[in-house]
Length: 195
Length: 195
DNA sequence: TGTACATCAGTGAACGCGCGTTCACTGATGTAC
DNA sequence: TGTACATCAGTGAACGCGCGTTCACTGATGTAC
Image (cartoon, rainbow over all chains, first blue to last red; front, side, top):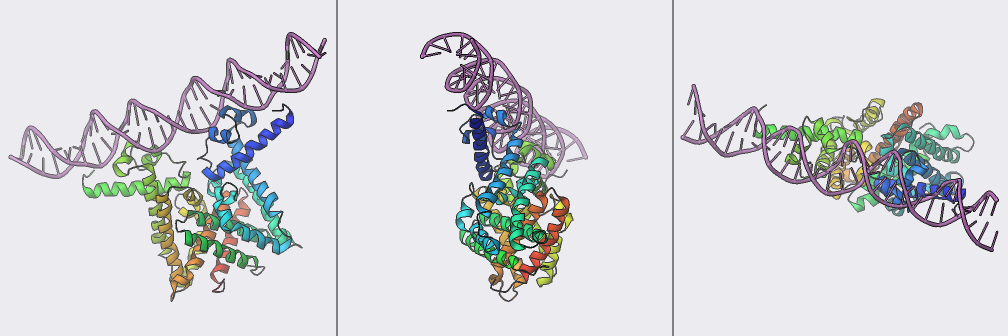
């Protein structure tokens, strides 16, 4: 094990990444400090060498999850509307629904974030704006701000539909809902400018 | 204080109702047994005279919340499509967004329910089916089953959009999103049969 | 009508346990000479 | 090159506290006679 500033930075990044996965899997209240640190191969006390509190780790992990979702998925899609359709089809795939750790932070945590501290809600808001500004640029390349609300509405619709598909015990109905989600997203993408 | 079977039944109903409010406010993991019982004017130990476990109370409260949302709001709306529009406008009002205890259990708890035990998920699923069957009957009076998926998609979209409006720290943006939610819901209501 | 008793809704202390946080310590590393 | 020392990432026991659950008990009620 090296003993450098880069090493410490890498460890911090590892804590943030594994915490993001754990938080999505077990929820914020459902993830204890000992578990969060064990996931990164460390012991409970180490958290406070990197963060002032569990809440600060949660806030950082939420910000990182949003950034990662944009960087790894949204920004990689084809340009314009075609890319949005790609994103929507990926989002409503059974694989993405069933892989909660690697899945969408919005769907996994949105109602808990709404109950969280201001810093966490702010980090989430900042992350959501990155996503929807990307959406908006695809919807209205010549005037992205005009499509911001449409993008925001799309994000809410996508997260809620995925949550519902995860909550239902009827697997067949849950699968059909994913297909309905794709249809609905496409309807909203193509809705009149003023709708 | 009377001492009859009806009294015990009333107390149980009171526990279920106050627990529903508390769970929506603080989340499932965020609501302790002592708090849940104190809300009903009782002490921690009493829970086990009414339920076998906290989880059974949670399951019962979720079922009750879904039933109450149907009975008190959805079933009271005007018949047909006009009623759906009424429901949507009520749902996306700032008042309903800001009154979390009295608000929608889907928006408050959906991602936590997706992580819950099977009985809780089953109770939620049963409740959601009551809601969407009502929606479907309004969408397609002559063939309700054909509109089930559309109704389910509408429910997911409504819950997710409301959660997002609650999570954002930018109040103005959150308010605009509610208006966008109304527009989007109406677009989905009026979408072609096969979309 | 008055008294003794059975019922039972509700109490609240106690259980073991995990929570978030603190802190004295370990031991591997890089550096000084 | 070899040795002494300073640095510091990480450990893990301990803190007070709240968790879900159990259970011996209280005391108000309805009932029996």
